[in-house]
Amino acid sequence: MTFPVLQDKVIIVTGSAQGMGAATARLAAAAGAKVIVADFNEAGGQAVVDSIKAEGGEATFVMTDVSDSASVENMVKKTVEAYGRLDGAVNNAALKPDTSPLSELDDSYFDRLIGVDLKGVALCLKFELRQLIEQAQGGSIVNISSTNAFRPQYNQGVYTAAKHGVVGLTKSAALENGSHNIRVNSVAPGAIETPMLFESMADNNLKAEDVAPTLSVLNRFGKPEEVAEGSVWLLSDSSSYVTGSVLHIDGGYTGR
Image (cartoon, rainbow, N blue to C red; front, side, top):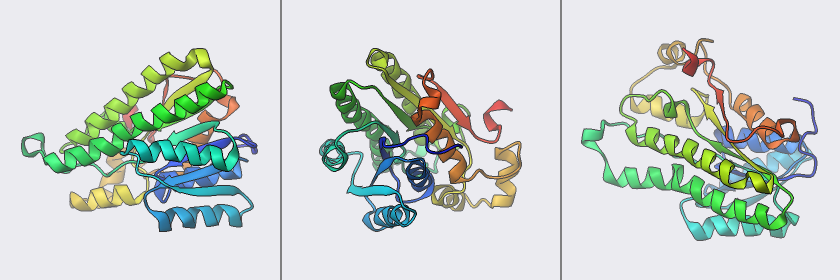
């Protein structure tokens, strides 16, 4: 990607203490953005901020629980206090998938996963959109979904339902806010080399060499940076006529 494509834009990235979120925060900063690293993992989030600053970028950590309305509202408030405005966001925060059939549904984990992966995206949209509408200068929001929304996996019914919901929220938000010149899109990653993927494989006694060929026609896992490239493009003016869309970054998995 040619830089800088986000020069002086203020971007929130949730769940950015590790994995795809961290890669997205770093790439956005490299592309010229001022980045809010939002996560409940303070040590990890601050480490990402430090790495961005070490490369000459600008970033601020904000402790955030996306499942809590007051915390998300504070995230946006702190963003404006730090940088004076908001231009876009990547709503990436998520918990790892469930691991049992629906006939053995874990009520507690259902509530936690839906609270972060679905409600969390809805709350982020609520307060991000309010700020962007108030500023009246447009903006771009990217919601991270999953290939599960299009090709469900066994024993991941709750995660799949949440990611279906993220696509629905994305399309609704795009429809409602086009008149404000606010674009809302989704990225649907496939099997990406993140702690979440490896934890999920361990939960299901799976090995990378056995799984990768079944989850990609390229016979490998994707890298967090490859997903970040797609998110940064959607945040940028290069995608100015794209809204309500889902960008699949999955090595061809959903196209099989």
